[in-house]
Image (cartoon, rainbow, N blue to C red; front, top):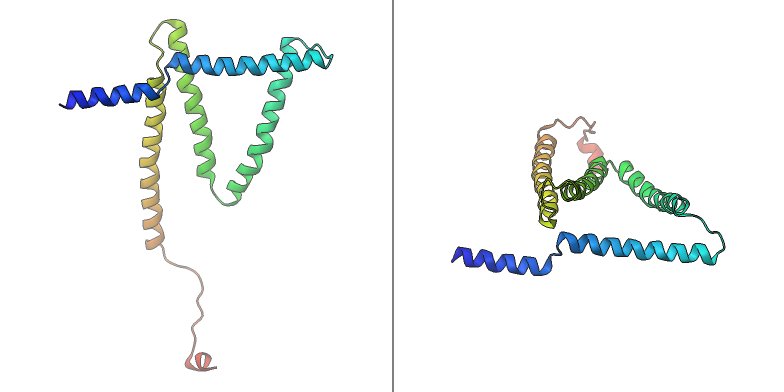
Amino acid sequence: MQLEHKSRLLAIYNSYVMSMWDIIYTFTTWIASIHDRMLRINDAGGWYFDDKQLHFIAFGIFGMLLIFVLYPLFKMLAKRDHTMVITWLYVFTVIIVLAFAIEVGQWYTGTGVMESEDIAYGITGFLVMFLIFAILRGLYHGIKSMVQKDNRKTKVYSREDLNQ
């Protein structure tokens, strides 16, 4: 009975999840359409940049757009003492890139099978472990704030002060 249940869940999961090849193909065709559009704009504008020059321009513009969007966000988070959020965003990005790089590397070198499930499990592993860390960190800071002595100066009021 449990095996049937697992098989049905796996079938449902597989019907919604793209295979690794589908993900790569979709991403590649999307990038190729952007590339073709850039070439048409380049030729229509009479600039005739070569492929390397277009990569230089496109990555430069894309990187600067990310800077203009992310810098104010990270600055706001840092002012509010949310450095853990900034750290998490950076690490999560590295985890995603690493997960894809490992799978592509396995395919290219023939040392393994490229599967989207490996990427999903890898990213999920990080998310679960970070959730455990976040809960433990929250408990630590909660207990610390309850135990820590309050060093703020308090004013002692007399009866006369209260009656005024």
